[in-house]
Amino acid sequence: MASKLREDYPWTASPVIINAPMAGIAGTPLATAVTGSGGIGMIGIDDAAKLQAQLEDASNIFGSSSSPSPNPAASAFYQERGLLPIGVGLLVFHVKTLDLVLPALCQHPPALIWLFAAPSLPDYAAWTSMLRATLPTTKIWIQVGTSSAAVEVARTAAPDVIVAQGSDAGGHGFARSASVISLLPETTALFAAEKRLLSTPRPPPVLVAAGGIVNGSGVAAALSLGAAGAVMGTAFLAAQETTLHPAYRAAVLDARDGATATVRSAVFDELRGPNVWPGVYDGRALATQSYREWITGTEIEVLREKVAEAVKGEDKGFGGRAPVWAGTGVGLVNEVRKAGDIVVSVREGARAALREALAAVGDL
Image 1: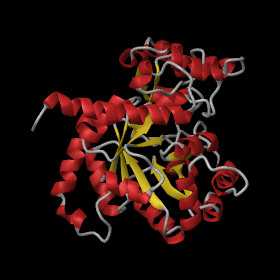
Image 2: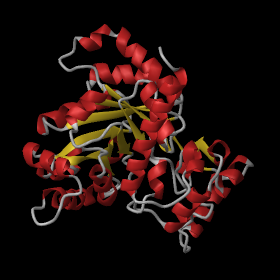
Image 3: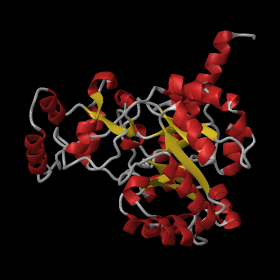
């Protein structure tokens, strides 16, 4: 599966590192920096109106003849295939209709489109069909959080890649999910058992891991569990290129012991108004003062008032009131670095971890 990923995205280096398409946080600067360092850079869309400008910026970076490319292989891919060497993440329930984003996507087609958070699993088949009819060379990725959902989506939508997101992930995911340590092997086993998948016109989807992966050893573990690549979100909250308020970043850098510093709860989506996410999703964030007050009985209306007041302040509420999305690996994220340096160091760390693991078992 890893070779298939490298084949489809030939500018990448192994193991393939992907930044999560964090809506409103992962923009063109982050995506192009990740791709520039041999990963797969993703833009996360929170406002469809901004997509056109972001894709144009990426086109200028990888298509310019007047300035050096951050990754010549990525620029060659763009020139030869007419696809931007980055991806775009779409929240299906939020975008609601492709009409809002298709004009921009058609003008600057990305290498991949990552779909997540559909109101129901059958929605992915409809979206995939429409996207492939309009953008036939763009790959489709779909994010799920259970092995059964992975099999259903593989059967009905036949994506090119399934992102198997474990419960350690920061931000939003399936409220009922498992960690990647069991999610990946079970999904791989189910794919092998489901012979119907092998008879579809498309090959079985490639599996990519997400959730709790912030360093090289985490990537190495994901590869050992059957993933072809690894997605990181929390690790890139410390990237210079990430669009993030300083107080948000400071909260992430200060956090330790992700098992206790973070918590999964739907209440985070209630703090600024009624929760608009489909019911099967919740989110992992830092266990803020708002959360602690909620579990001790403070009414949600009271908490909303406190958050509304806090966001007017200099820290925009990220000092303990507004949600700070982060995964359980947050304790390993301790310094601000360039995104490219993060990609390279994690990739090299994964290679070293795999070599050490092989040396530890000796001759097999």
